[in-house]
Length: 460
Length: 112
Image 1 (cartoon, chains in turn green, red):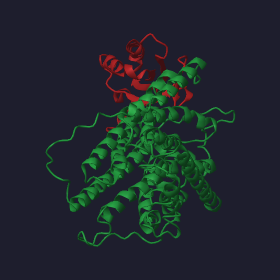
Image 2 (cartoon, helix red, strand yellow):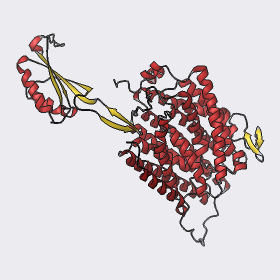
Image 3 (tube, rainbow over the protein chains, first blue to last red):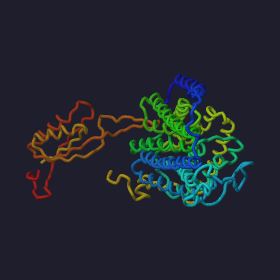
Image 4 (cartoon, helix red, strand yellow):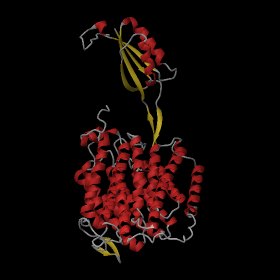
């Protein structure tokens, strides 16, 4: 029932290969317009550039914040009714923890602005600065701004703190329905205070991956999404599967989610938030080129989701004879993750194909994880880790500044760092306090056992 | 007095209710249940895993009736609930020892 015939495999492989070979051709845009004789302005003043850059990140931050609602709804919909309150609680509290840790430690660790504790901008930055995040004073002027050529520090912090929270959200979906709240939040503390900011500084903070390997990751296929995926993978290996998920003979028991409407709503919310996630990562909107780029990024972001959703739809129809809604949802997200590494340079067609490959990866890898007895409740590892790695590699197809070597080395370095440190932290937490609730509590449901507020109290 | 217990397909409830109304039976209790007889379950696929659903949703309709109309009630339910396909259900008739109307305290046939 789940296998498919060899000729189909070969045909699929040939189709994929020809798609990938055609990627450069699909990157073509319209021919450039001729010079207009009359110029109405010569750009905007430096004040307005600062304002528009800051505005972009203010709006972007709000959109990325909204992704927290998306994660919460997807996860609430994909877990069983008896665990919904716990899942929602994890989402709200991890968000708060992430923002607090990023303020206390993460922001300056990630953006030391040249003041590296270990290394330097020239030789390679390894460990950023220590200190709490401090915004500019109230009512700054152009003279008193931290970086007048860029944007308000407040808008930068507001935007970036949301990325930190997004990374933490990825982990909660994989580990759902059988993890205690406290060890999960303690892991989140370490992830958001240290793991995420340190590896992010290596690229976005001007660290060694950026300066020495020419690593390109526009909005974080590796820096955000694969990081969440590696942390989740380390956790799920130590946590184990849900009780009753896998039988001794290797067969799998399906545990359908409680609400497809919530799961779908969550995906659309994430999709919308991604316009801020990718679009505002341009970090500039004060010129004709920049604002056009922002629009282009958003169109490509959408195209990625489209490709991923359609690929999953077609593939599940072929393999299973019925289209699985949850795969289409995962596919859309995987498509979004895939274009996140480079949403600017591709053409719309290429962006769609890059997203489609993300969708393919998800449909194949979800059953694969089950074969390995890795119980990923929402498919976060396929969506964020596998599609994140693919998206990071795909940068070389459309951006000539990227090198395959640079991308691969960076993927590996970040992967090893995040996986190993996460594994150690999860291991320590497991040894000290245990990660799982008791078997009785897990069967009863975490809403009753740990939260004390049932999500569906009248549903008897 | 008899207690007529019928396990029927959920889609037939309205027909059964109307059929009983025309017999002047105006009270019943309906419970959502799961069950199977000769109608096997079906299989579904969730995220690449095939699983069997053995139990099917049914409705249990319970009516307390006078001995005189018990047979007529059973027949009416059968006619209304039947679709001709496997899974139509079953009707059980049990002896009912006592009935009390809670509001007034009436017992026996006048409480039906």
